[in-house]
Amino acid sequence: MSAILAADAVTVTFGDRTIVADASLSLAAGERIALVGPNGAGKSTLLRVLTGILEPRKGDVTLQGAPIRGLDRKAISRAIAVVPELVQLPFSLTVREIVGLGRLPHDPPLSGTRESDRVAVDDAIERVGVGHLADRDARRLSMGERQLVFVAIALAQASPILVLDEPTAHLDIRHQVEVMELLVDLNERDGRTVIAVLHDLALAAHFFPRVTLMSGGRIVADGAPESTLDAGHIRGVFGVDPALVRLPVVAI
Image (cartoon, rainbow, N blue to C red):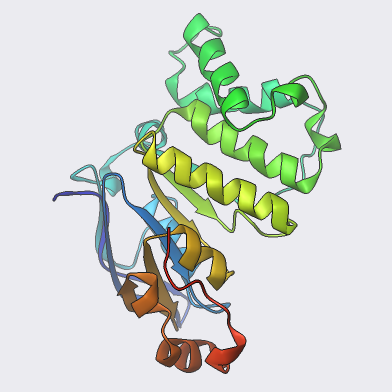
C-alpha cells in the first residue's frame, strides 16, 4: 500500500545538537498512529517535519507521493490539518469564527465566505459536539471545550490527514476520553489518517492500533501497542518499573 505521508531517513539538528536522527515513518491512508516517548525524544519535531513546517538537514518527506518541500503552504494545508497544543487566544472571537479559520486554505483570492464554507463550519461544530457553544467567546471556554474547538477547525479544513500534538494535555479524564473517541470515529467512520503525539501510554495503547516509540531522536519501536509498549521498552526507554504502568491488554 502506498504511503499518504512518509519521512525517509530524516535528521534534524539545531546547532550541534541532533533532535531527530535518521527517522523513517510511513503512514498509509486511513491509519491511526500514536507517537510516544519521553520528553525530548523528538516527537513534536518529527511532526513539524512531517507537516512541512520544518525542513530536515537530511532526508526527505513525501505527501501523497510528492516531495513536500516543493509544495506551498496552501497545498499542504489542503492535505494536512494540524491541531496544535492548546494555546491562549489573544483576542475575542466566537467559536464559529474560530472554526471558520479552517476554511482559509480553500478560499479563492478576493472572495468572501461561500455557502460551502458555512456548511463545512457548521458541520464541524456539530460533529465535535460544541453546537451549543457556537456563539460563545472562545476565550471563555474550558480547556476541554477549547480542545474540541481546535479539532473542529481541523475538520472544517476538510483535509484527509489529521495531525495532533498532545491533544489531551491539560484535560481531565472525561475530556481526554471524549477527544480520543472523536479521533477514533473520524478515523474509522470518515477514513481520515490520524497521527497524534501522546504522553499518556494507556490512552495510546487503548485507542491506537499502531504505536511508534521514540527515544533520543530515534524511532526505536513501531507496531502494535502490545509489542511497542512491552516491559522491555517501558523499562529501557522510560526508565520505570513496567509494573507501575497500567496498559490495556488489547487496543481498540
